[in-house]
Length: 480
Ligand code: ADP
Ligand code: F6P
Image (tube, rainbow, N blue to C red; front, side):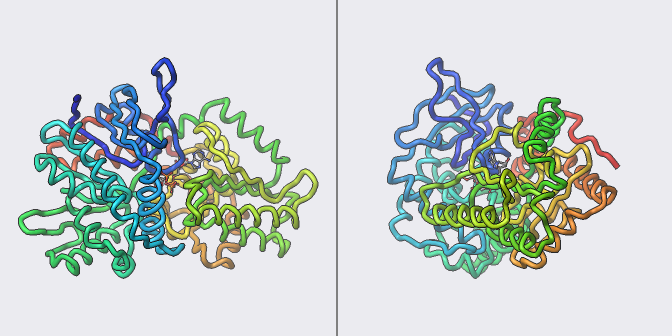
């Protein structure tokens, strides 16, 4: 068994599990922040990625991708239901997102979640060389750090949560709260998107475990678990380079023509998820049309909503509601050849996303709760022209960093309508000043910096962080 000094463990692999007959495999850029972020740094890192390939049944071996080794973990149909669709995405996901959809507590799912976490821990233990660093990702694998510590006490163990960590009173609802807290605290370093999450965990550790805590460390007997905020980012260089490609710029111009050369294009790009506030923004947009503040003749909205977790009932009913509402709005306000909303329920490749971002006059990102929201950052990276407005929910982690966005509370529909109008009517010099400030920030805070900061905090010798290649320069040219 080949072993690595850096092992990343995440629910999803970035590759398809059905390699081509000649053995070649292609990167699967599955929609989702985790895959986007990790793919960007690991594609040229000597490491092993342990994860699920997306199918059902035994894991098929997958070839290395450059210097990255792939160690697939298989899931049976029952495990997919109990672990991924059940405990991870019907219990933890809604609860961690402020219970914007009621979490489901099904006692049957817990054993499956635990068994699958153990399988991931065993796979990581197998491919980690002595004293390696193992970096466990996200809520799907919250028990893995403690399991791994038991199996391999020699390892340095990191855990990073891509989603929000809820306030203690919500976490306390979880029937298995103690096991989940202890599981995560098996790590040497627990990273979050925002400092508030570390504070919430410290409060819980005091309450449930009687631990001595501060906001950056938790003492459990003779062991200290460090905690901290490490806001995740994007491959700024990749998105800037894509957006600068002549074919992408041509595509963007063509998109505008295809949309009927409107005065303004509003764009949203989300996984079709109830945390993303898609219904709230449709309500706001529909009321602007009703009030005559926006005219279909000169404004169009493009909503990309890529299917996600399609077998989970709450996602199916959300899709029905959204599609019904888009149909209603188009029926009521559209004209022949001029729909009010262009609704695209499909995946796009990175170049197509870059072209869409360039076409937008107003990028509308209105999650009710979001760990970070990488779409907002991708939009900024794609706008070397300095044009375009970002309307961003206060409840996305990105709002703490992209302060020059038009910040909004999506629950306040009147406020959302007013902010959309403000962004649509903003003067070009106001927009370019905001864009320059956000691009300058992003150019200093890209995905490589995130990974290196996390890994040097985990392993102070810097040996592990050095495995991540340095950022390609220049990243985003700053225009002031
Ligand atoms: P989440 O992790 O909740 O899905 P993020 O906004 O952080 O939310 O990340 C979404 C990622 O998925 C981004 O990198 C975005 O480019 C990608 N994505 C979103 N929609 C699509 C789509 N239709 N096709 C391909 N990728 C998409
Ligand atoms: O960012 C949160 C997250 O759950 C990631 O772990 C994942 O990449 C993304 O959302 C997409 O979800 P899924 O893997 O269920 O398609």
